[in-house]
Image (cartoon, rainbow, N blue to C red; front, side, top):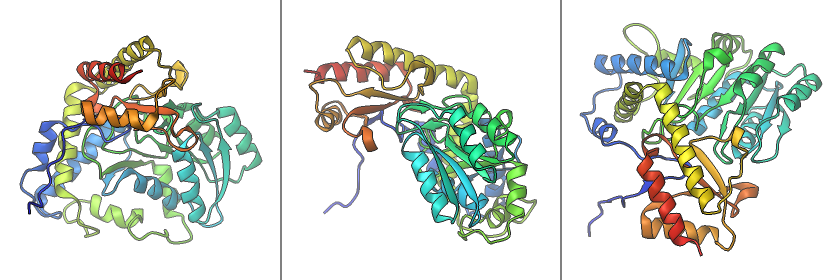
Length: 371
């Protein structure tokens, strides 16, 4: 019996992962070296510099967490919150709700600011919540909500947090590389992303950055961080410093080769060029789908160009239609989550997948399966 696995060819146009370029896959196939090897330490420093440029920040504490983005969310929250702290958390989709659950498990009191799914976070609702809880330590929100395809105004929300003397935690897992992420301009304090979306590296790593204010808050804690692995001080013993680094964990060496290559490709293209490519592909997709009578969920002003949510067409069954796209055309798109399950499709135009020919291939396939 042959136990070897050969993945089927797929055009990944769902909410992630996106397709990975041959160059990134080839980089991951390079010979493995030790995670404390001087050559690997040099690569770690190169990647930190690349991530600062991608996040548009000068934050000293910027590195890729050896984990999926869900653990970066957890790191940001459990690092900054202590038992008894109050956190204001905005929820307009699945991932804001996940933030609230992590904060509660960390012993924090959560004040939830809810918005309708498919709408951005309302800064005025956040301001009102802050007036009710001036003792809150931080505001957390999702900049690019993967479950709904909505972009919230990170600059305005971070400004509210700073004016109130609170820290800001920003989830831009689907944002980084596809739309402007301007950490220093926003004065954001903890921001994290994923590699499998617009960066087009395989899943399993999570870029994260902390401002000096956030680091100072960590150093001022009166209780230990509840997670050993996510303890920022311990982690920085491995990711920072001149010369020898202290052992914390065995980093995924080959995955980091791939991340370095994907970031190199991003900067060869240019960040602004990448943002423009994602916008142009979205507009092309919108034209094709609207020509088929398919309507978008999110108002045009608040759409994520890289994560498009549309209503399932009338007379079409969600899951069987998506299965036909997969089986007959080799194209993966995503279904809805939570209250939108069975009602919407989530179409990703992220990173390597974000190409004119892929938009046309998908639109032609959808046209073929419509009644």
